[in-house]
Image (cartoon, rainbow, N blue to C red; front, top):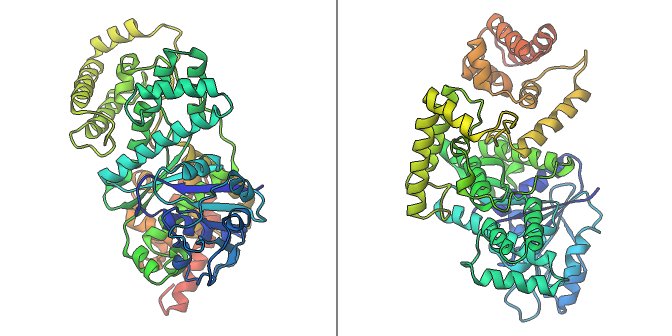
Length: 507
């Protein structure tokens, strides 16, 4: 089954091309046939990242480019490149497809995956290609202009989707245009749905249905701080709350000089520096993308058209549920307070200063009410019915990308694990990730230092203690992961002994 993956976003220079290229390299290294398509309207560049020379000469006829997607071989086995080309006397490239049939031809290529690098901006052709893909990745960086551009890209994406759905109904399309004329430019999807509901309920329901089908994924690049890594989850929550769009967070890529060096050397990062931090981050993002592309997801429920800030409960304001303990409420309040501070990155362009102050006041009220047992009891009795279910809240740590990755890992482990399995550090990490367990959790339970746990998974044997201590560490990790401690210790320590003997150390 052929899959089309689009990489786009609102702002240039955030790493879309690097993500697209290395995603293609990762899939090609797994034995897939991959076509990387340079569809950036600002110009050709992917061939330079791969160290390729474009064919000399210009294309005379634009139709020749739109109708023929002739890929070029690259230095990476299994990875092909469809480059940008220019017409005679033209100063702009002839892509992305100026004719609708160009997008359809992507599905006819003899490859397993087609990866589109759409570049920056919200041009109609780029939005159409993003919407027609099986999976769309929006790349951002932890900077206010980039965050604002990402939200603007989502608004434009929804507006384009609604127009595409009504292309055969001119009356409803004119009604949408009339409604948009009464709203600010690029209104939020929720604003548009509510405004349409005043004129035509059926049309508003159709627009709400399109909202449930819009599901871009977010990748945060250039991460330096822990707050930068948490920004993706916070943007997902704010997007769903204020835009009505489920922006699932796929992962982050750390700021690393190895990325810059790989661009200078004209080699993909996963080939030029596969052991760097950013390369490991890219691999994890690619693994989650692969899981999302190959697994079917449940449909989102349609949002309530009348849903507004006044409809949120105090638990919604804190981002928690009715069953939360006092400690969970404190942690949730601390997290929300960090998001709703002045100059907050996740709220860039979403709220005015007046709206932000109103949200801060409501947050303080929710915290004070729910931390008081009597006031909380009274609030629950007045707000919820006895038979009302306690709907689980969206967890920033457990989105669809992470769930798909874990499901894929469990399927792979079911085939890999047996009585003869040789356990490596990489396999132990895979088992841990499939179970959704963090190293900090294992360290807290077993009292093994994080340094030693990381060394076990990375097989950094020089960082491990004497054999007798390492044996105990490995056995405790195996027990926590519900593996056979004897088999894990025997196979892992065999590799450790061989390495120490080869390096002239005592086994």
